[in-house]
View 1 (cartoon, rainbow, N blue to C red):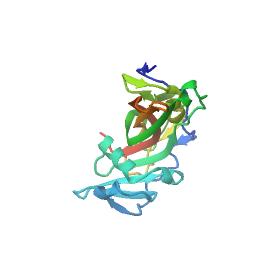
View 2 (tube, one colour; view 1 turned 45 degrees about the vertical axis):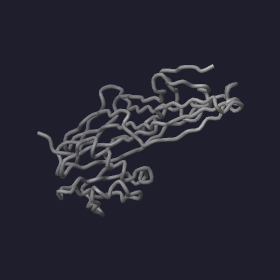
View 3 (cartoon, rainbow, N blue to C red; view 1 turned 135 degrees about the horizontal axis):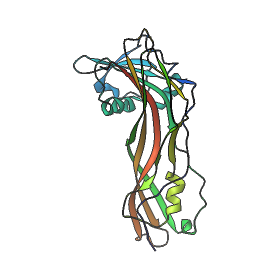
Length: 242
């Protein structure tokens, strides 16, 4: 019998990295090593740690990536971040950490032997975009309260599913980013050309098309969509405000 699920919340947690003073290691006074035209950015897989994105009108956005995260950051991700944040000429985008959902072990259901489940993933998209805090030039600021936000995987409303356990085992995962009270965030250095640094977390998801087919009666099949929580990006934007 088909079961209809409107929403599924998965209970696996991924915590953000803890840094004593977030942003302290970011030195965007260093010179960028390469200029990459915006129209070519989406095709770049291997990016330098510091580079400039050149818009068609010649204006630039400066990007600084934590060297430990370079393998997790490609040009398509950067291009989306620039677009999502409407970054203007001269802004600096600082990427600190990329985290992923981890699947919780799920016991096989009785239906698992009856159905073949296949998956087809689409492109990443924005699930949630969250502001954390902003800090002025030459300053540091601790959080006055705990900050936490979570994004879960879910079925699209009205999905008709034969074997939900098989879907959860493959796609289940919950992204949770948490900063404790007292966590210190740094603003741009006193010598910086910027007067403000804004910290944010970007949660991403993928729409996965799932097909389940009865092993004994192949004509019995169902296809539905599942929104998989894929990863989050901890980052900041340096700019001049006021």
